[in-house]
Image (cartoon, protein in one colour):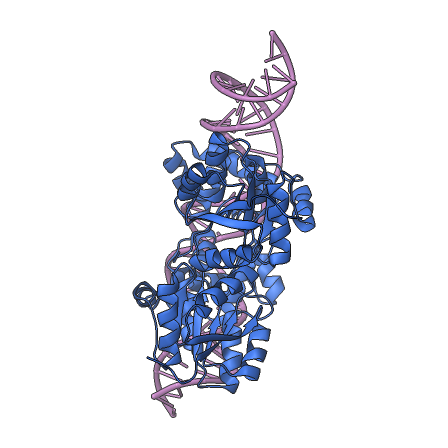
Length: 214
Length: 214
DNA sequence: GCAAACATCCCTCTTTCGAGGGGAAAGAGT
DNA sequence: ACTCTTTCCCCTCGAAAGAGGGATGTTTGC
């Protein structure tokens, strides 16, 4: 197989080391070419518009704009964009949102070049690429109902350690309403209490607990 | 400067892409040489013993044995081992434990080669390498009292969403005792409730919320 | 040897949670 | 038009949480 022109690739990841690794792995394939590198979501969208690569390889967790934001930004201007998500590990919610936003494929960072390279080629060819284990987790996720925006807001307040009364003040609603939202949250996540709700939500990628250091 | 022999390096990280990046960045320096690669903590200790490199570059979050376990394993047999920790982001507790276990340096994954390479050379030379921001966070941490092993156990139970009564049964202690531990935890972490205790502990790297996917 | 830290147990009392009901208004989709 | 979802409000009540006290045995450090 001798392709006329190489597959052009944009990579986006906030870690220099990871970008270096991606370049090293990708450049070892003669038909693949990294044409741009971004270190955050906003830059990724900008560089996509400038280079319009065949494939964009995006990390989900990035500063400024995260991967999902970047996908939406890109797809707004280039609906046919072929986007492959590359992430370390991630809850079902992340995966679901990425695919809903228009990602064509999903690869775990733990995968070797044997997992990554075929994924790039598949997405470049217009196909989809979802590993078996990721696909099966999506099936599990659909068993849970999605939280509404307001419920996620309340959940974030809960994660901050605020009491219902405080949350009510923050969101300018009554404590009764906070409790109602909480009831819905507990039901949808199928958990027993607010603390478990927070850990379950973090696990599934619905909310994040920011690290002290980035 | 023309070194007689190159600095030999062991790298350990569970992500293939990151290992590739490290190799690419390190091999571009003529006086540095990657002599072994490990994908988990146990393997890191094993390969250290076999190759006895000048520097071991370890990620903290790895399967089987984490970075801190690996540091202890290595330092038990090779107390003079020169270990450099490389991590994506991490709570103060992680950093503190790593340095206590005998790491000589600490580098963030977001740093470029300009941050990594000098760190490797410094540690290889027997020096220490702690970035300014990391050092300042350590000062902050020392304001908090460390949790005891038992308190961490209780905290993990709390993070699982269990009620005090359930925790008492699990740990075979009375509910009163659970409440006592909780009181101590809240005091030490300087937080108001159990939910905030969990998020604060996760932020500081005291406990982890395992992701759905690895 | 003795103080300090640890882990365990006990009690009271107030506040907060969360399950159980109920309902109403606005907007989106059919 | 009608239904469904979302967001908001209200009520009661038992259980859980957490602040406040005090106490004992055991290890660990100095």
